[in-house]
Amino acid sequence: MIPDATPVPPPAGRQTTLKFRLILPFVAILAAFTVIVAILSYSVGAALVRNLMDELLTEKVERIGQMVDRHILGSGAVLETAFPRGKLASPDIRDNLRELQERFWAATTLHPEPNDYVYYGNEAGQGFGIKRLAPDEVEVRLRLRDGTARDILRLDSLVGQPRFVRKEEQVFDPRTRPWYRAGRSATGHTWTSVYVDFSSQDLVVTRARHVLAEAGGVGGVVATDVSLSQLNLFMSQLPLTPNALAMIVEPDGDLIAASFTDNLQRDTDGNLERVNIHDDPSPLIQTALRALLPRARAATPDTVGIRMLEGLDGEGVYVAYERLTDEAGLDWLTLIVVPIQDIEGDVALASLGATLLGALAMAVALVLGLRSFGRVADDIGDLCAAVDALSRGRPSKLPQVARNDEIGRLARSFEAMQQALFTDRVTDLANRNALQPFLELQIEAASRGTADRGFAVLFADLNRFKPINDRYGHENGDRALREVAQRLREQAGPGDFLARLGGDEFVMVLAAPTTLAEAEHKAEALKAALQRPLETLADIPAGVIVTVGTSVGIAMYPEDGEDSFSLLKAADLAMYRDKEAADGSR
Image 1 (cartoon, rainbow, N blue to C red):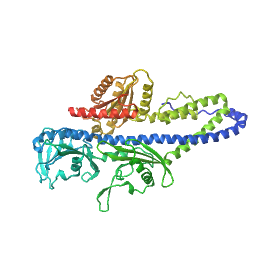
Image 2 (cartoon, rainbow, N blue to C red):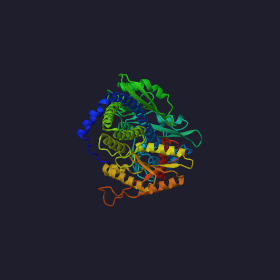
Image 3 (tube, helix red, strand yellow):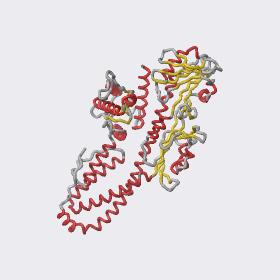
Image 4 (cartoon, rainbow, N blue to C red):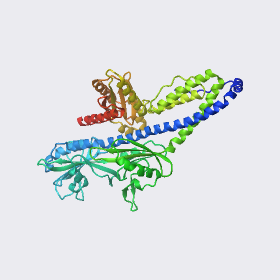
């Protein structure tokens, strides 16, 4: 960073002389010019704010969509692990109870945070389920005869012998449950309605699929629950402007998650019930619901729409929406509502103030001479070009501005602001803001090239980072991230780009041209580098070795995507396949 310098004012005597010699002839011109520049700056600033808001809202909506996609994506793999497609169901689960135990144990290890419970019921009324309690302990819920209550057992290894704990008091017939009826009648994977799980006091949705019988027809249904508590936590922590609102809702208005309220409330009797967004009196919310909810319901899935509306209170609002769907019938809506006053008021005032200061600076430059004015104009032009590039989301490098006045401080402040905007504060790597423009530049360069200009995107997700935070504290978590970042730097080659997306996710873009074999070799090198024990953690008990490990997904341009979003999504999905393959090989 360039340190701030103290401005050096011009000599008072010379300033006074030039003022009297030059200022009077230009007073009228400067006054008119200042007014024109102020008007133009205000108009251009307002247009720039609208463009920035469109980009910001699109990024936020897509980020929510990616979170939903990642949160529910693993449920399909969980079902297929518990009951692989093509595996026929025996009429009596006692015939293959040991096999069920092994498959369901493995299924609950894939994504234990949202999918810790997998269960199965058959046409005879028998039931089998595993609820993961800890990495090395599960609860087995077993019903072997129709008309009886389930046995609750404990199991502490994949091939162990379950221990009887108790028998439930109530009779649980899987054939009467909504998930069974939904899975039995569906042609493939399907979702139940979202419901309140009173044991966890969270919203839950169940994914189910029927299993064919050996003799033909439906033999039973396998299902897994997906807790939505993590979605609600994610939405509550989503960075937004002070008065902005973000929410995920069902088409009827029932709330899935929101940034401004809980998704559950208690009625007058103290019972938990779902929140319906139609009941919220907020003018912002009612504006979004009345003007855009019908449009959002009919929108093309996974496409962001943005509108600027007049709110019920007369104030303008930006609204962004996206319809979230999947192959199992999910149909949710994302809505973000931002009052224009959150952004445009301060920016317009700042733009007007900057224009007036700029006009004053130009007047002083004219007084000091055409030569000085030329230098000032050049520096302002460089700053304008840099701000214009930044408004399009692309970082730029300013030429050296060797000034000790307001323009020099502005240049250094701009460089510091840009550094903070595009740098991860924990690891000093590039951040998500820097990754998007870098990928776009790479794609532009590749599309213009006549030779092979393909490049690779590597998406790395740490496997065991959360236990470090939980067991050894967030300071050690930050130390681990910094050590991981350093090891990734050591693996990066000339021209490679490295960024931290947030949490424990990193992306490395390999410089073009890159082949798939080279990308796979680099991925293995990253895994090997991050498998070594961490060396910078503090206060770790003697003899304890801490590792993080990583799963890496590869996406190649242009085979896996011709735009930055497609490449990142393809690499993200490939990373999950790598993680699942690694988990399955253990």
